[in-house]
Image (cartoon, rainbow, N blue to C red; front, side):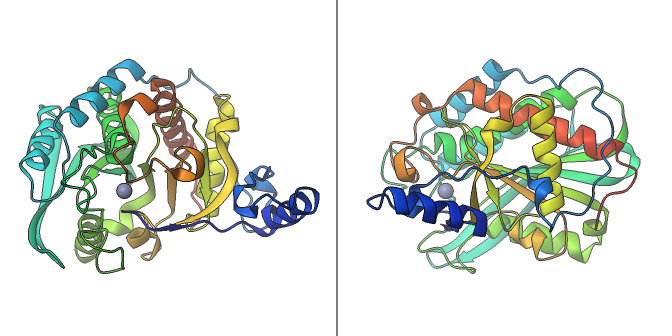
Length: 333
Ligand SMILES: [Zn+2]
């Protein structure tokens, strides 16, 4: 389970008040505020973006959706399960020939000790610095005895990373290195707390702090719940405003801006350990999965509710974001 709290921004709140005045029976939390482009916000430093050039990034959305189906076909994949192991092997089997490493450890949880395994694929570039793109692949532990397969929550983004790997493979990068991270044990095993959640990514962030890798990370892009056919990526207030602005500009260049940032949110997710260590982060998440997020963490989170187009929108926006970051002279702190 990911604990997230919906917080309307001051702007959204003022719109909500207007709406509430007109339709007093509507809950303010249901209001989709029309946000201005993030550049209008005072907290975003002036960005000097490279011109829009070159073809849009390619994503094979049918292939990405096929990966979602294959991951989901294993069944529930909570930590410690046989299915979980099968999905680990499924991911690494798609990385044959790539440089990848694993960060494994034993997590001590309220339900006992579990092996945890983060998988990191590295696509080296010649420019000094790393852009990380991450997704968790485990499913909710408390739902392990149900039919819950986390098609959107875990599988959609993990499948998209496999497709991104396909797009990066075999191409010489004269820009930043890209590391793809399939992180493990994001979900709480009992009740979401700081201690009972984000096991894998907390371990990896600490490891990269200890070996100083973290100093080289220019941006941390997280994808979570990005397959919803009704795609509305939230603007996360825990993310880094300038990086969210770059994401928005990338989406705009591709004509996908209407799927981004119509709603503000404040999200506790895998980016937090990196936010806490000063790494620029953007969490791309649509935390409105069905009316009032009704399909989230239920057996209703199935492939039928997803769309290949949504995978394509998020995947190409991520790659366009990388392309913009690659060409920026300097990145804000
Ligand atoms: Zn979840």
